[in-house]
Length: 289
Image 1: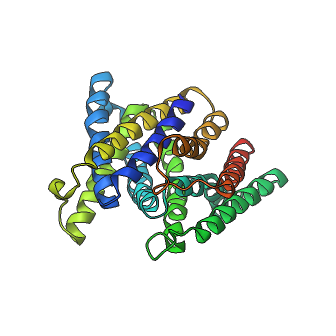
Image 2: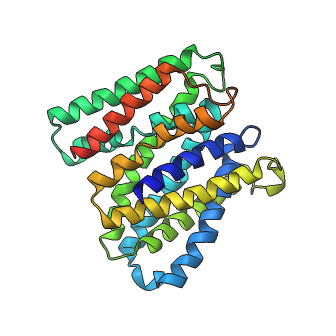
């Protein structure tokens, strides 16, 4: 299930890349959240009793996970893919364990071991290689240059916060489908309110017709990822599941080499090396946690 989640995450990333050539990343997030809700909410009520599973504490925890990770994290993630491409954005986003570990050190006073430190150095080194290679790219302009690198960094930070709230919700006895439903619905409502407050409600007619199927496909892939990821976490420890899911940047690069045109994803040897080093560091941080 974890491997399925990694593959689905890679397919989602590339689908977002094709679906946001002219469309906004906010349109992509609306479509993906809508697909999530259309699949997860009926499944939760058909296969369980989500209302009975919830307590006020789990409702608050899953809502926080949805607003921080599913809404803010995905918004930053999708914008990063649009600006710098999925093959560069995904390895940087995979630095999520680094952020989670640093938060644990600062907030919880946890101790960093030698292995942890080396793994963190590997993540930083891998990201530095990717940043350098991206800076040399001809595509680096005002939209896709160094400014674009800030978006996957921010996504990794919020993705790193989300599991803590999700864990608090599951500790209250909620099922996987209940947790996914609450966090997805809260993220969808939060993002709609944000769009209404800042720029008005989204208009589906504004999405490019040729890009809509890619965005729907991204939503379906993301739903498969969520079910695979959380289902695997329910069966196996984090130290086994997360390293497998963190391999998604390597799947992105493989799929890019095989199927994606050069004008969308430029795969270079330095980029592959940087992704390998960053992913190895992310896996190391997780295994040593």
